[in-house]
Image (cartoon, rainbow over all chains, first blue to last red; front, side, top):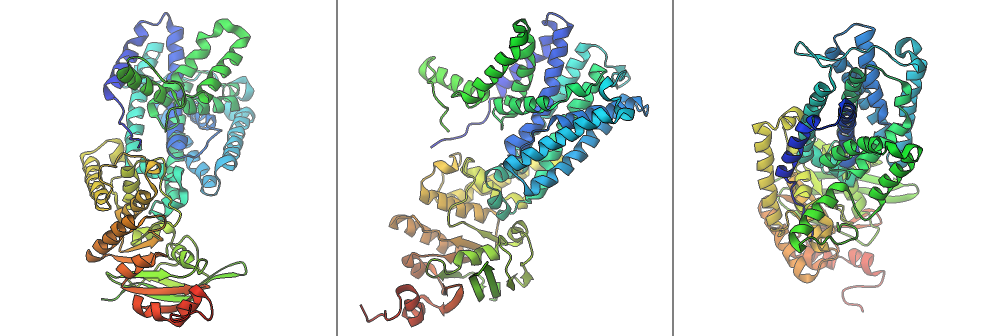
Length: 327
Length: 259
C-alpha cells in the first residue's frame, strides 16, 4: 500500500536561503531581471496550482488575469494618478473579480468545454488590450508606468525588485501550502476527484470553484500588476495565448499539485530560454522538446522525480530505477 | 421515539420508466431499517432522491419535520443525512485520512484568513478533527491505514472507509447502499458488528442490502420495494413469510412450501 509522506521543510529552507543570496552571484543586472520575470511567472503559476492542480479546473487563458492586473494597475497609476502601490491593489482586485465571473461557466462546464471557455476569455482580454486604444494605447504599448514605492522608498533597481518579488513569492508559497493542507484544500481535491461525491459529502462545490478561480486570478493579477511597474512598459504582444500555455505547462511540469514544484518550474522555464539564447532560432524547438520530455517521459514531475532520487540514494546507494513513479 | 426520516408519497420517473411509485416509509430514531427488493426495484433511486441527487416528481422527504426536497445534496448532508455509494465513490487518489476529513468538511469553522495566517484556532480545529477522524478510522477497523491511498485498499476496506467518511459528517441518518456487496462472510460479520455499534450509539441507519444474513442480523424492520412501489413492510420474519415478497423474488407459483 502506498503511503504519502510530508514534504521536507529543511531542504526547502536551504533552497530559499540560496535564492536569497543569489543576486550577489549573478553575472549582471540582466540575469537578476530574468529571475524577476521568473518569480512573477511563478507567482501566477501558484494560482494555477491551486485552480488546476488542487481543484482540477482548467484555465488555458490564464495570462488574461495577468493582463488584467497589469493594465488595470498601469491605467490607475498613469491615467488616474494613483500611487503605484494603490494601483497594484486595484489591479489585483479587478483581476480577482473577473476570476469570480469566470468561475460561473465552471459550475456547468468541465474538461475540454471549460478549457475552450477559458481560451475564449483569454482572447477577449487580449483583443480588448489591442482595441481599447484610449485606455491601453493599443498595439503601440503602454509607456511610462512609474515604479513602485513602498514605505517611502522607491523600488527601482533590479535587486530591489528581486527581493520584493522573492518575499511575496515565499508568502504566496506558504499561503498556498496552508490552503492545500486545510479543509479547503481537501474540498478542492474532493471536487477534482469526484464532484458528485464531494457535493453529497456536504461541500458547496460552486463556492469552492469560485474560491479557486479567485485565488488563481488573485495570484496572476498580482504578478501582472507588479510586472507592469517593474518593466514600466506593457505591450499586448507580451500577453498572448502562447503565454497562457506557457503558464499551464509550468504548472504541469511542476507536478500540478505541488506548490513548490510549480514555483520551481515557473522560474526554471523562464530562465531556460535565456540560457539557450546561443541556439538562436532553434531554441523554441529545443525548449518545446525539453518540456515535452519532462511531461511525457517516465517522470511524473520534477518534484516526484527528485523525491524518488533522494529516496533511491538513501536506499540503494545511488541506483535510481527507471520507469514511471509508482502511484 | 418518533420518525427521524419520513418519506411521503415519493414518485420519480425517468422518461417512461417509473422508478419510484408513491413510496412512503419512516425511519424511527435509533433503528436499522433495511430496504430490500429485486434489482431495478428503485432502491438506489430512493436513496438518490433522499440525498438530493435526483429531484422527485412528487412527494416529500422530511428530516425531523424539516422538508429536504429542493435542497442541494450538500445542504442535505449538512442537515444530517450522509450516505455511501453502491459503486464505491471514494476520492481514490487521496489518503484514508483525507477521505474521512473531507466528510467533516461542513463542520469546519475557520475562515480562509485564519487558515492563511495559520491562526492558533484554525490549527487546533484541524488537530481536533484529525484526532476524531483517526478514531473513526479505528472504529470501522482501518487503524494503521490512515496514510494509505484509498484506491490501494482492498474492496471490503474501501466500503468500510466509505462508512467512516459518511460518519465523519456527523449525520443523524446514515444511508448505506449495499454495504456488504463484494464482502466475504468474515467481512460481513465485521460489518454487522459495526452497524450494531452504530445503532447502540443511537444513530438511525437505512440500509439497502441483498445479503439476507446481514439483513436478518441487524435490521429492526424491513421495507420491500418492487417495480418502484413498496409491497411490504415489517420484521424480517414477517417479510420472509409474505407471499407477495416471495413472488417478487422468485416469481408466481413459488412459495415457502413449493419447490
